[in-house]
Image (cartoon, rainbow, N blue to C red; front, top):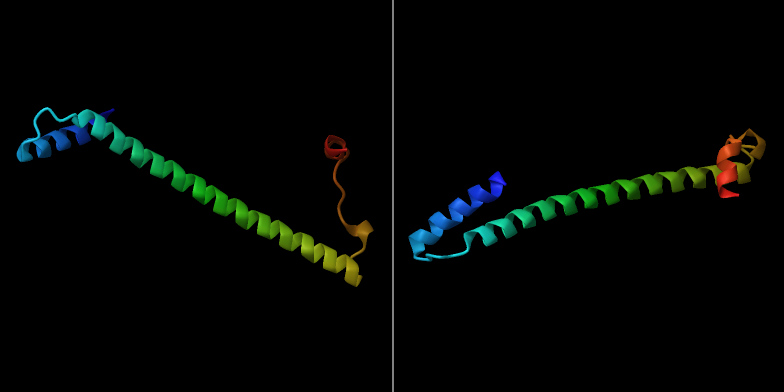
Length: 92
């Protein structure tokens, strides 16, 4: 990987300045790149979870409004849309 090689060259240059000759810079560079990509993946997963949480709160709010609307008489159960028959067959 190009990024790993660039990080490795930077680590070797710094290691040469402080006298760390024979230092395994490739291993350290690879671990730094893996940590960086792992952080990016975890950040993406965290964003997806937050988006799903917002969607579930929205669905719960709509369901609550439907329940309140039916119980208060603002809506009738017959006026609510029904699921198509193939979708009902999946869960039945």
